[in-house]
Length: 420
Image: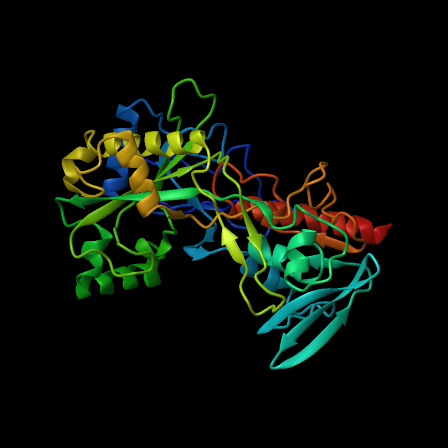
C-alpha cells in the first residue's frame, strides 16, 4: 500500500507553502506524513543563514531534490506520532490470524537440517516453541536479527564454535557490515529567552505548552527529534549532499537528560554516506546476554574528513547572520577547537549514534551477503529477514520511512510466495 501523506493545518497568515501536495507524494496508505504545524524564530534564522552561505531553501527534503535547508516533515497525524504500531499493528490487532506475545524473548530459530521450521522463545520463566506453516520471518532489527541467527547456528563458523554454538556451515557475513550515521552536536548560548530551555524553566510556559497541544495540537509537543535541517555538500566538487545538519531549539548535555540552565540551541552534524563498517557478535550462547556491538566510526579518511568539514560548516552557519544575531557564545566545543586535528579529537570525544543502524544481515549477491533479493537467508530454507539489517548500506537520510517501505515490499514478497 502507498504511504499516506496528510497536510498539517497551518494558519491562514502562514507564509509556508504546502510541501506534501506535489506529484512526488502518495496518499491513501496507513502512514501519515505531515509538515510541522509551527515555525520558530530560531529555525527561520537558521534557514536564512544557510541561504546566506549558498545553501538553497528547500520546502521538501523528500521531493525533487534533497539539498537545501528547511523544516522537517514528520510521521505524524494531527500532532500525534504515526508509527508502525498505529498505522499497521493496531488496525490488524483483531484479525484471527494474528497473535502477539509480549514480554517474550526469542532464543533461537528451530532448524531441521537446513530448513527453518519454527522459533523457540522464553516467557514468564517457561520455554515455548512455535512451528511455522510456511516460513519464519525475523524482524528483530539490526542488532537482534543477527544475534538470533548466530544463536541458531547461522553465522561465522569460528565465532559460533568459540561460543559453544554448533555452526550450520559458515555464514561469515551475519552480524558484519554494521553501518550508522555518526552524530556530533555543538551547543550555542542564545541571547534571547525563546528556546525550549526557557519554556521548560517556567511552570507557566510548561502549562501553556500543554494547553496549546491539548486544544489545538500545536507547539513543541508536535515536534519530533529535529525541527529544521540542512542537507549540504561539505566540498563543492561533490555530486550530492554528504552531510545532514540538524537544528534543535534546545540544548542538553545528555540525551534524555536535563536541559541546560541557560537559553540554548543545538546544531548537529551527521554523515550521509558513511564508509566505515562495524559488527554485531554474540558474546555467549546465552540469549539473555546482549551482543557485542562495534560501530567502528571514523574508520576511513573520507569519513573523518567529512565530519571535520561538516562541523566547520556548522560553526560558520551559526556565526552567519541572521542566526549570529541570536548567539551569545559557543558553549561546545568552544574556542579551544580550531584546527582539523582538534575537530577530529572533538568528534571522538563527543560523537554518538543517531540511531540509524543498518546492514548486519545485508542483501547482496556476493559471498559475504546474508539475504538474497527476496530477503531469503542464504543457505537456509524457509527463513527471511525483513528489517533494517538487510540494507546493503545505510540510506542517505533518516531511516524510519525507508524501513517501513522495506517492510511493505517484504510483505508483498511474502504474499507472492504464499500464493504460489
